[in-house]
Image (cartoon, rainbow, N blue to C red; front, side, top):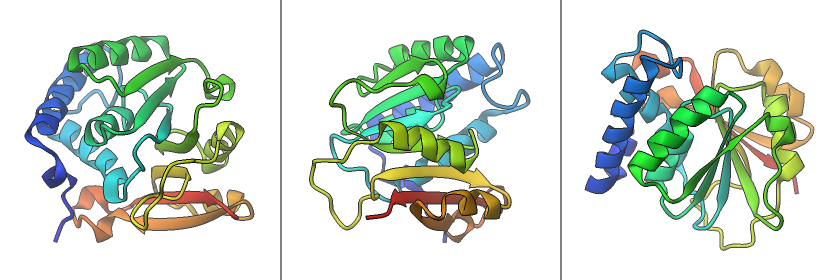
Amino acid sequence: MSWDPFRALSDEQRRLLNAYQAMLLDFNRRINLISRDADAEAVRMHCLHCLFLTHRRFPPGAMVVDWGTGGGLPAVPLAIACPDIRVVAVDKVGKKVQALRAMIRRLGLANITVWHGPAETFAAKPHAECAYSVSRATAPLRDLWGWHDRIARPFAGPMTADTWRPGVICLKGGDLTDEIASIAGEADIERIELADMDPRPWFRDKAMLACAARA
């Protein structure tokens, strides 16, 4: 049986997600945010893919950085699904940043901000608790871990058994053997096969990697 994160959304969250999907499709006709031939069902699958990050909880008040957000994937679906966290969407491509800011403004999302520039130069505000990073097929795991490790701060809030451990949680596909090996000495890495939660062919070669610093 498929695990459907859409079921956990309220009516208002569903409305926001549907509005975002429509805007993403519209902007994509003018700006290459996702594949040019994407239709409404493809956009829905992209958002569903991002919502697998809610398989476990991010603790309330956590700051989550999305590296290479593009058109807001996974930053926007995550901000909609988790209104009690703060999301920072990072991207270096100006036209994508402009489109994303326009979509966020129209959606009225108050828990997401956009930072324009290379990931290597991103600096969180002083004393901000950047305990989590997310990404969707943006960069090699070695790079993602380096960007996260540079800004990571311990999370001071309460943690429960069903929350992600602070670190990098990313969505990737294909053979990840070399990528996992690249940081194996620095992190505890859990691989979660998306096909185990959703048997549709679209998720067959996709996985979620949860990478947490070793104690």
